[in-house]
Every structure is written in structure tokens, then in C-alpha cells.
Image 1 (cartoon, rainbow, N blue to C red):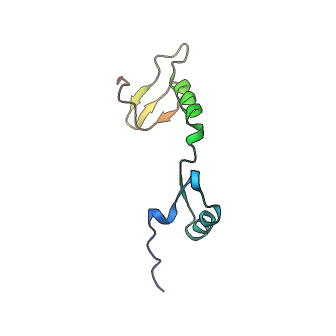
Image 2: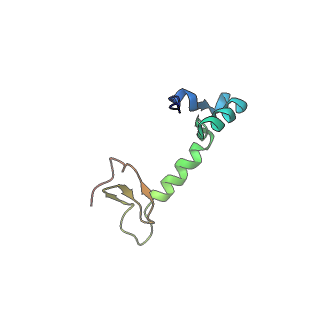
Image 3: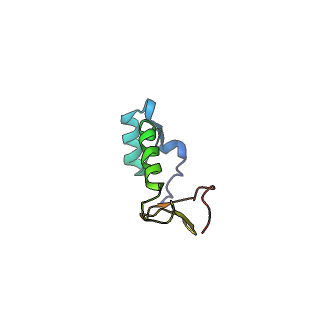
Amino acid sequence: MTAPAAVSVEDLEFHAERLDARRAAEAYREHGCLVIRGLMKPYLPELVRDIEATAAPVPGAAGAGEKIVEGWRTPDGTLFIPAPSQLPAR
């Protein structure tokens, strides 16, 4: 039995703005995964808005979040890794 050939990032990497779906499907069938760069780019403004809303102070809660060993925990329990550098430690 021979060892499988090494896989490089280039074997798995595709770009959303010039995606060759047939080639991407072949790579997925061969390797079981893909990296599609820029796939979420059209949604970034909405994602930023949602993240900022998640990080906003909750009425009645103490502050907008806290640094913990793993990163940053918001009042609703959301975990962001890493913690923003401007977030004060408690």
C-alpha cells in the first residue's frame, strides 16, 4: 500500500469571484474539503452589524462583555476568540 500524496492549500483553494464549480466539485470529491476565499464578502456589512449588536451592553447586565482565558464572553454568553484588545479585563 502506498502513502497518499501530500495535499497543498492550492489543491483546496478557490476564489468566489472566479469559482470554477466543476473543478471545485472534483477537488471536494478527491479531498473532502474546500477553501473558498471571499465567499462571505458580500455579507460582511450585515455580519459586522450583528456582531456589534451582540457585543452591545444588555440592559440590566454589567458591561458589554468580559475577557476570559478563552477570549471574550458577551452578556448573552457568546464567545469571541480572541478578545478585542480594547476590552478591559475584569
